Image (tube, rainbow, N blue to C red; front, side, top):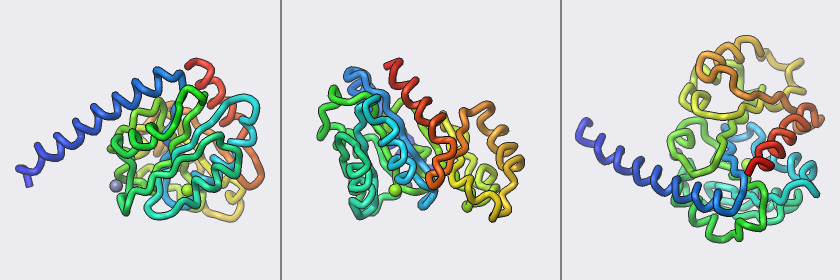
Length: 219
Ligand code: MG
Ligand code: ZN
């Protein structure tokens, strides 16, 4: 096993270099870029769908959707008002990497946008290990997934810049101990910016949208 470690390190270094190139390209265009990660079904596409109409007239938004096989999510983003929606079909890969993002960036005139939303493949493990070149990583955790997820997937919770706790409208029906969940998060990522949202009722979405606008204005 030990002889494989240098190979893995080389792959990660190559990815990091490409991520830096992506970052330079995004910065040169003055765009604020986020990488949204979550398990399947946590509400990545639903959050994007609810976010886009709230940004109408405020930010010009492009989305890049990573998906194993279909274009359902980028179609939804386009229908919700994304000025451009690019699909990355990963061909079975369970995460996006910097090469895939570069390919998608090449399909966009980045100078036409203020915000780039990248929707990663639904997966709570390896997306955390691959930098893309975006400015902020956002993790969506949803109430039905359970309150133990920070304890089970520390790598994902440790590295993110913002946490969206989604589907809070389901709290009355599910045994989700918010205190226990947040204690787990606090150990891994003290003081992380956190939003509690429901894409069904709209609760909490204004604060999330404000965060995007404030960050985009700084670019
Ligand atoms: Mg999706
Ligand atoms: Zn993967």
